[in-house]
Length: 180
Image (tube, rainbow, N blue to C red):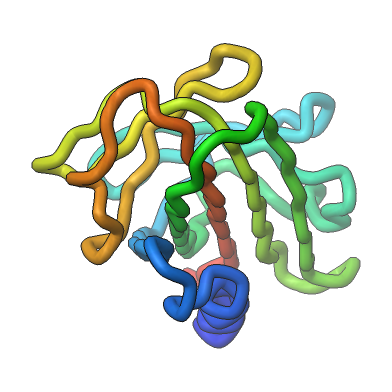
């Protein structure tokens, strides 16, 4: 996956979460690492990998992915993870949640890789605010609590527990095979 794909994702986020709206902003953090595949479970459509610091994680592979048969333990992949959070302060309204996903994968026979973008909107109640690290915990309509990073220009100091807000949380994962 080219870096341009991630830039396109971030550009679309800027359109959706534009700075022209009062009390709304986007916080973006990109993490990149070369990981090594340790296990492939074709039945469960999952790949377990070890990161550069030794941590192990498992990635669910979308059903649309056509090149899972090429993925083998020992192979290395470059992964880029982009997380963006837009926080909009809105008064009142009923708790709600919605989600969407966009998947762009390598064609059959090409090197395994692709881009997955997931966006979730939550209207809920502020459960807590970490002012030092700029996290807002939001209790969604089903009682689940999600801690989300807020941009520097989002006025979280104006938030308090019990206040109703809306949050748009978007994350993107780009994966490309690295040739040894």
